[in-house]
Length: 81
View 1 (cartoon, helix red, strand yellow):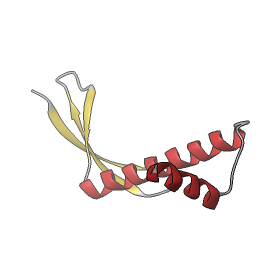
View 2: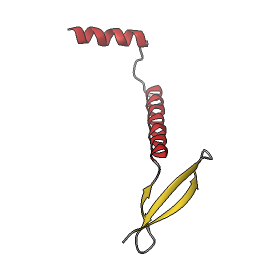
View 3: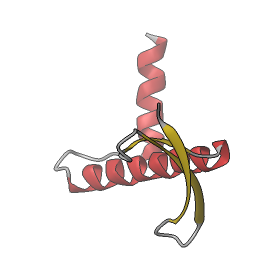
View 4: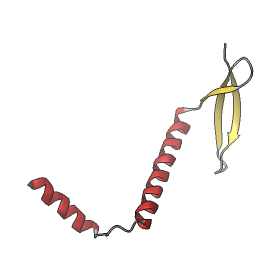
């Protein structure tokens, strides 16, 4: 049977993360349990990272760019047809 073990880990921003690892009988970590607030924080940071990567990809793209207001107008025009 797997045994939970508690560890406190400092992430790269210097914040304490309260993790529990589930280990198999051989002591190999097979799962992680963390408080829901820390999980939500990780999800928010991943979403922000995804936005940054999308921005970087768009910036590096050779695609034509148009002003935001123009894009909204074109979308609204296409919806009304």
